[in-house]
Image (cartoon, rainbow, N blue to C red; front, side):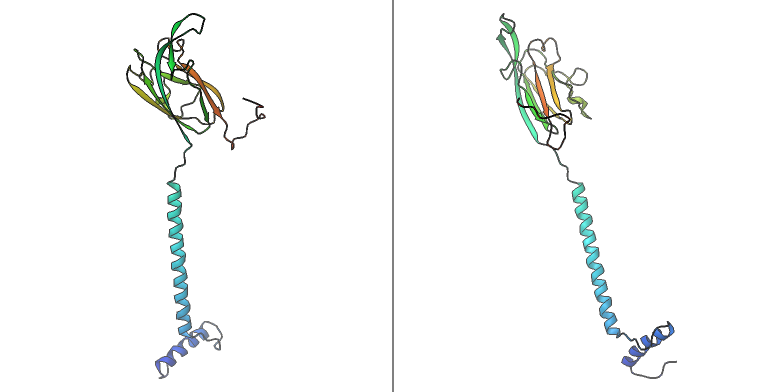
Length: 205
């Protein structure tokens, strides 16, 4: 039973008594007010740590929501008829932006190609991108069965990404005999600087 003493004295006596029972040194005494101050500092440190942790989680969630994309290349093509002599005799050909063969697409791996094709011919028209893989993007392949031909007087926008297929490829019309009429052209996919290639750089284009 505790002897009669002032409350402040009891606050000093009790920690000493507890220390003795726990095997501690009775001479080592910690002021309860100091312990309370330490507890407050500890609680403050824990709150600050929890705040930093929550902020870190929010930052991580924000980073997971970011989607990086490669550069976009936009093209507008108009298909028309024209008269040229590719074999020495005047004949009707198909021009893309008044060019025979059509324009060359010069791209780099990871570029997004957006090609808006206007069909000014008097029959359906459709372009395919030979050799360019359409990964999870089959409806941009541009072949009959995957795409409907572009009706006369209308347009269609192709949108696909060239990935790690470094090299030269070909696009051409796959309807009727349009390919023979001149509706074709080249696609160059150059290597990004981050992708090593197993051969030296060309001396000239």
